[in-house]
Length: 231
Image (tube, rainbow, N blue to C red; front, side, top):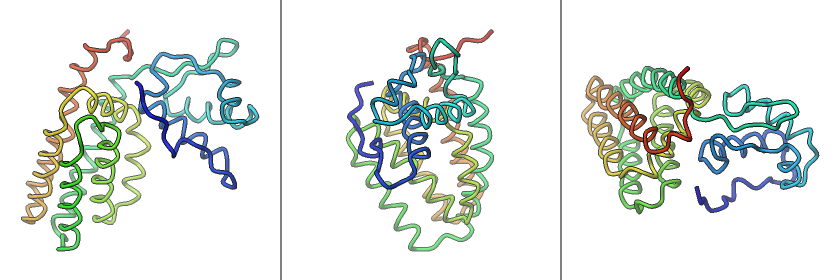
């Protein structure tokens, strides 16, 4: 995927190693830096981060629980290909939660929040089309801001737990499709919130999150090697 090394993928001394390593490997898989279908070695990961194999083994176990890797004894660990079924399940959960979140936000919106949302939209619009990773980060901030504004930070944690496979497709979508449509959808959500139109905000959020229904088949047909096949 030709990603540039990211500072947040470097272990910080003095901080617990296990959680850091799990987060880093998870992000590398989601962003396709560790490609779907590729083998990753416990010993090579340990060597690259100057660690013993124990924290790597523990991180692999957690990643397997997330459905991101498959541990094959004596054969290595495989980065699982993207599961279309898991993507659709995550979208279903996310849509249900976030549609209600924006309803709440529209009912309690204030000028400070609106200024923040408009500032975020401006940053998204100014970002060059080839800055896919940065756009994903801005998109993440946008959705989390709404969850926090609704007082639903726990609901956002639930979303984060279920959306890993969806995020893998979102990253591929950002690489292969123009981002203008996503920014326009964000603006429609913000406009409805500013008008205190709770139902309109929910409709706009549902339409935004359903974009993956059309993106997924298009991406899967372009890169079938990255996706699990039915059967």
